[in-house]
Image (cartoon, rainbow, N blue to C red; front, side):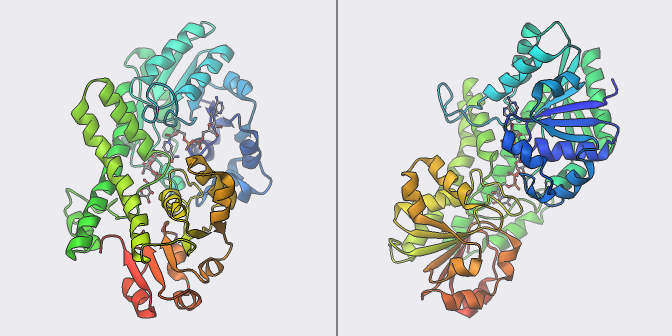
Length: 463
Ligand code: NAD
Ligand code: UGA
């Protein structure tokens, strides 16, 4: 089937950018992104394209080009479902916070609601594409819902997980390492796969479009994230050993990364990985493994998360210890709150957990992040439920200027690797701080020699 009308349910970090690229690269396809969240859709439709709800370098230009031409954002979910030949489901699949599998399994309630809505509305055959990250064998459940509550129409279910990373979403979507499409090997299944292959072929070379069975595709997504996160936890584990042995983790990473079998990417030691997916997807993998009685497999992957929690904890513990075992009443400035640079996303950011630890020690946290709002910061801390929101408000203040944020601070902690932090006038910052002035660089971002020359007591991860 030649696709001319696409609907995407979920206008988030994946649905928004992915559909913007599809629309931009396929002017002959009408793409409608729908969401129940009205303010989010209103923001996608904002006259001023700089106000779209997701910050990604290059995205606003693409949205400006395609929006109103063949890219639409709407809350009219039923209408978009009805009109589409192919429907991406790109809703959130967070870790369950209740019932069986609480804290481990993926919560599929949004996925199921989408399936039921599609089944209710559809009047002709449709291809349903799992874009969200899902436990292996979810397509089976989707099919059962669609086939049993529908209007007798035929649905083909494909798995097409997304591998974009935030901050580089546009780049990743424009030239992906691969596009993965899983489908059934029946004639109808193959036809559905071909339809989606054709959509991506508008800009992705055919040899980068990989087709597999549904289960391999679903599982590969979880495995890719698990392997990536494992690399970060591996180098972070070594960072602690480096601190004890006078080895330098940057040097070690370079030395091992030059082995072409290991490779240089994703070996940056840090205060710990964050983001909405690594932890969630590994927990999901652990849960699935346990469900099959594969306890050794489950324990193996769980260690990646245990190591990550340890890395965040030891960062805050070190701040307290270095500041003479008390931070009570002390101003500690955070540079960065986002979970990585070039995004306004803060989900599972290490900064949240480090701040929570320091507030427990009665520190006064001052914060500057170029893209994160104070409301978001408070939301993140309140979500942990460690203390009342009024208590959180008393302990954390956001600043519009990094220089103001650092004034009279006892210490600075770098939590996100924003490029602009490197170019600050560090001498000016030093002069405005209480002495001794400490910098805890959770991203190995600054030049240690230069910082020490200025007079800072400078500590980085893994050296
Ligand atoms: P998100 O929370 O930013 O967006 C999901 C959107 O779906 C929300 O706006 C929500 O309102 C909407 N939604 C939920 N239920 C709905 C319904 N029934 N009808 C209409 N809209 C509904 O999430 P995200 O970061 O875009 O992630 C989506 C999926 O993609 C997840 O499964 C995630 O694991 C996966 N993923 C995310 C990334 C990433 O970088 N964020 C990358 C790859 C894969
Ligand atoms: C990650 C994957 O890279 C994407 O392929 C995947 O699609 C996505 O998860 C997802 O499924 O959500 P993302 O979380 O957006 O993308 O960003 P990453 O660049 O992977 O960074 C994740 C975390 O690891 C960040 O906190 C980052 O600072 C940290 N990290 C990454 C390190 O500490 N060191 C590194 O060397 C790399």
